[in-house]
Image (tube, rainbow, N blue to C red; front, side, top):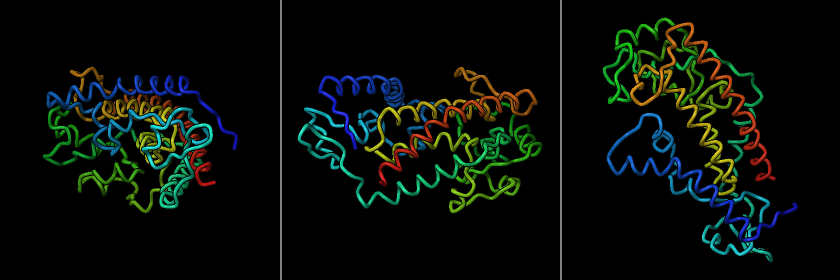
Length: 283
């Protein structure tokens, strides 16, 4: 493998660009937490996913890059010394199964045609015929009865287990499929917004082997998808500046479908990049 050698000034500049980019997301989170405040859109990637902000801030170059004058990276066991500096070593055997699973899932997802008919109904199904809501600080736009009516008027087509598992017991039988964890590779498809958000999960599960630029790109995509997810939800987030996508109307469903298709296209090169990285790590 040909390796790129980065001089200290080069890799430090790249690191600084990454840190500045990520701090746009982590600094407001820290400020909200200091006040005990919660944000239903912006906090999601830091609560639902397990990657800590401090790790997101760290810069890693990815495989095939040597860093001159970077002995500080040796505090992470994935790195090793070279005659010219430091680089990532080979993938440990203990991590191969995770990379193999990610590769299989991402490859299977990429090979399927996208489907755009779910209209974000999963958030509605999570409160269907229930007195409990996931975001208790925010009212339901249509009230409980109106929310239930929307769920009953539209076909539920959720294929993503990690969305389906939060459906209320009354909503689960309404779904056209009953996803299980074991079905994930067989069911996941690229039009699913949760599959797009989960590119961030698979990127950080490859830490520190995933280039930080790829991790940050996946995070940014996931954050933008989360915005649509909540704008199309039953909650009224207009006071936060999130205009609703009214999926209870034909116009709202068309709007949702357009944005969903755009996100599918944005996800395509990121998914391909993760697949290529998995293949490089697995040799």
